[in-house]
Length: 122
Image: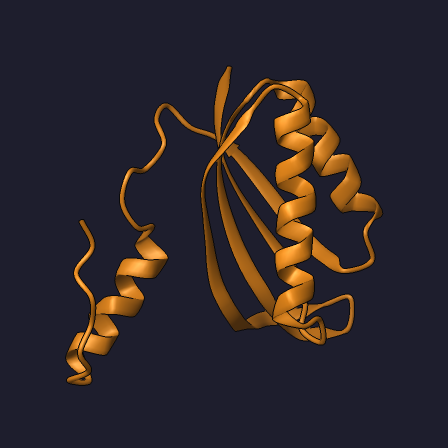
């Protein structure tokens, strides 16, 4: 089984519930293909550097996946068909990151700089 980091962007006018439904749909594809989704992180709505399919913002989501390649290919095929998903990228990695991703650590660092209370990650 391969290890993958997968990031996908959902159009800005989708609700968080719709994004969660997409995550569950894609997790189901991976599970049905004999794989496992180790971690899912929602990075929220972020501005895009340039417009993608007439969108200036998008919901960003990271999935860490341990799965055979055909299951990942099927998930990517489903994403390419979806009108809600505007971009996605899958990268094969040597090992999956155990703690929060760099994006989430960066968010926590900003909160600390602003003086907000944060939870510690174990």
